Length: 190
Image 1 (cartoon, rainbow, N blue to C red):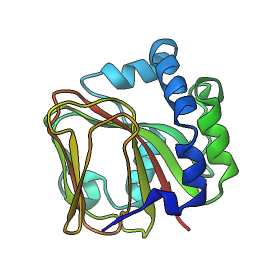
Image 2: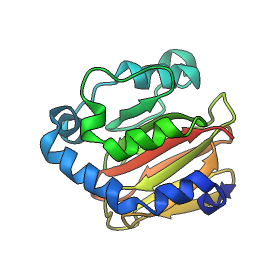
Image 3: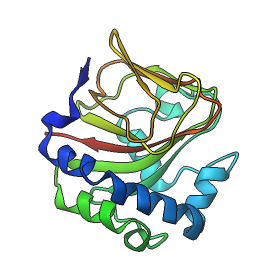
Image 4: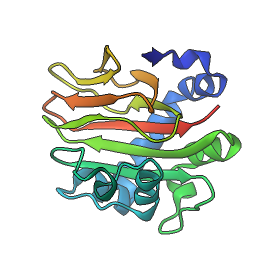
């Protein structure tokens, strides 16, 4: 039940600029304190942007009745449509990514998602019928991170690996790597 990201014009542009994205990511790891905390904290805090996105999709623990995640999971927002990020200078830290999101009205939310080594996000589906794109930002070892959508499974293992699916369909992920998985995630509707 996975889609081909190359079939989406603006995702092709994004994938053709991976080196710019990776450069911004690497620079922010050393220069942006909020991002460093997100990458290294044993308890990444949910920002209001992430909480709002989870509520929109009926995915927070209050709505589901349980937490979908095991271990450390976090989302570091880059863009939320109609909800500007003001708690740090997002345009300074991620100029290409913020400009890209602002130029594409179909994008609803963009963030970096972190899933701790050896942990999972249980099978679930979102209340909205949107597509979600994942770009792996770091190399993983062992068997990488598996994503299941419907009856199909794909693995992200190498920096730059991508996947795309309709997140209203049941899906899950399991990071069997010994390293935390960091993905750039873009939620959009066509």
